[in-house]
Image (cartoon, rainbow, N blue to C red):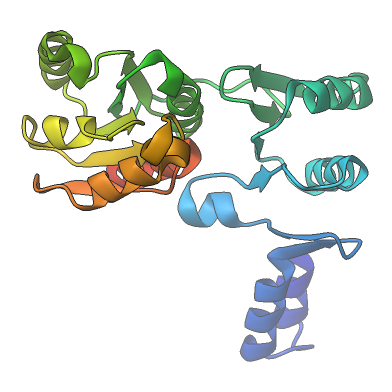
Length: 253
């Protein structure tokens, strides 16, 4: 960027050329394998993330190494298996990077330096059952990476709905700005929560279920069809997307 601006000041390029060069500089191309939006953090307030499944391990490692060479921002690797994390840990272990891996969520955050928590807002994260916790934990990591405090309560679904109300009341008293609600099976919990609160509810259908509910499609359809207003729904098992959307709500004020 400095070089481009110097060329502009020296009259070597005009303002339109400078604009095009700056736009092009915002994309890093890594040996034809991946293109990175290197200015994402400054533009959106959230760093780059890499979806790891289906990527060859050597390609994944190259992406990580090249990104860290060219950026000071954190890097997030989603849906990362324990086995691949151990290999990355070995390959990057001699560097000064901080690797923060959440085993339940299978998500890795790589930092060049320790971060101080900002706690710009509070987000409530709820699951219907214990089987949904891995997706909720993915959302929690994202929410905290974005500088918010996550208040969590797990296994409080409609099968024992009396468990829900004290937890919702606590989160409302804490002033949460949005709720992330993860549920499989029939996916009813987000509708119940949305009927009780006056802040946005983000429904996350999970691939927990059997028979017609197998794979999470019933939960997805139920959340999309909810009669309670104020619900946004992300894709099945998309805790990452739910966390980013919650941060978007907080940062939109």
